[in-house]
Length: 160
Ligand SMILES: [Fe+2]
Ligand SMILES: [Fe+2]
Image 1 (cartoon, protein in one colour):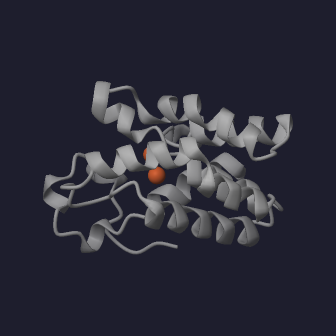
Image 2: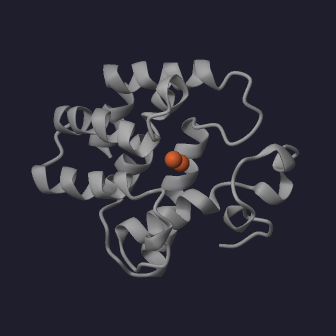
Image 3: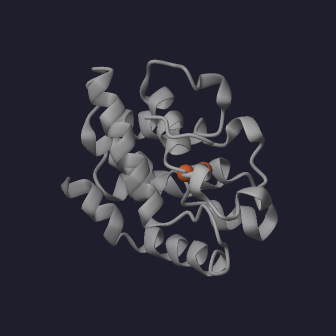
């Protein structure tokens, strides 16, 4: 996981992360923080094993660390955050030694992580979409009624 550890140390990653943290200081639910990134990585890795997709663990963790990294742009100027993340992720991935093909795979997952049309796919982007949603415990969230997620998107019961 050496390259993923390099992502965590990357100056641009840290800069973006700090900006998200600032915007979400008062956000009560669904923060886009390291806890969320790790939940998504671990759930996606479980799905990867269960579905025998044999996706490299490092690629899953790299995608999880970077999929929401542009979230601050959505707060700043309403840029959809999957698009903003696509702006910052390539430089970070290149600097951390990911190959052209690996970067392409990761960027596809980041770019599609809010596209519900792929939710059932038996693929890297499919498991990642499901892991991102499954990471949110809406059924136990005290702000559930204030949340702008559509009801069908919320996890109102535990699913694994
Ligand atoms: Fe997201
Ligand atoms: Fe996310």
